[in-house]
Length: 172
Image (cartoon, rainbow, N blue to C red; front, side, top):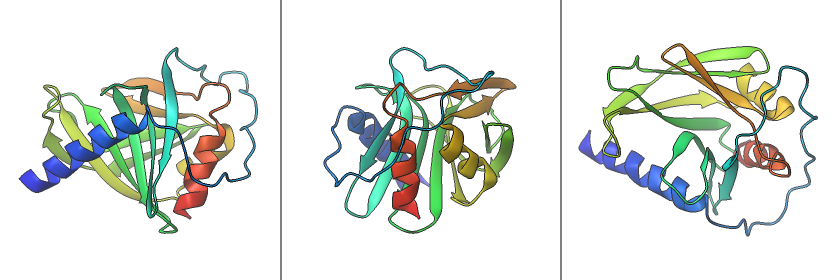
C-alpha cells in the first residue's frame, strides 16, 4: 500500500513536472477539436491539458503549468487501450472517479489512499479508452470531473486541443 502511494505521488510529481516540458516526440497529424458548442465550458486562465509522451508511456494531465496543481491525470502504455486515472479528492470522498464529457458520464470505482500533498485522498482507477465518455472527450475536447456534487469542467486552451487526440492515438 505504501509503495503504491509512493508510486502515485511520483506520478503526480512527474505529471506536474511534465506540465513544464516541451513535447519532443514525432508529431501526430491531428486537428483541433470542433469549436466549443453552446454550453461547452471555456478554458480557465493558466490551466490546460498537458501531453507528455515517453517511449512506452504517456500522460495527459489537466492542471496549472509548473505546479503541483493537478486536477485530473490520465496515463497509459503505448497501444494498450487502457487508461489509468488519477484525481485528488477531499478526505472521506467516495472511492470513485466520476467524469463527464459532452453529455456522456461514467463513474469508475477507484482505489483511495491518503494524499501526502494535502489533507485529501488520491483516487486511482483504470478503464478502457473505448468507454463512451473518453470517445466523446476525443471529439469535443473537454472533460468534467464531479467531486462532492460539484462539476469542474476542464477545457483546453486554444492550440492545445490536439494533445487530447495525440494521447488517445498513443494509447490505442
